Length: 116
Image (cartoon, rainbow, N blue to C red; front, side, top):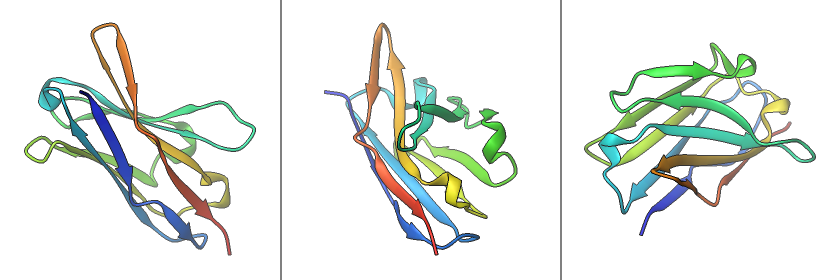
């Protein structure tokens, strides 16, 4: 079955960096666009970045442009989110997401907390 497992979250000080990973299995990874979303407490889930099958990133949320970088390794069935210059407002649960046919798949998420 389709599985998406995120890891790499944690507590980091403002201005710091984290790299999130999402390991995918159960489907043909290199034929699927992958997405990173995030959800902060009391807020709606928002799209962070869209990573096409080629690895080209076609979308970043305005709030993360210039600070976050999405990428993927099709040989490793893994998608990444490099987060630099982190701010307290980046605190959220980060989710990996893909759509296969009519179905939408999500990982369980990984918590990122930016605080001094």
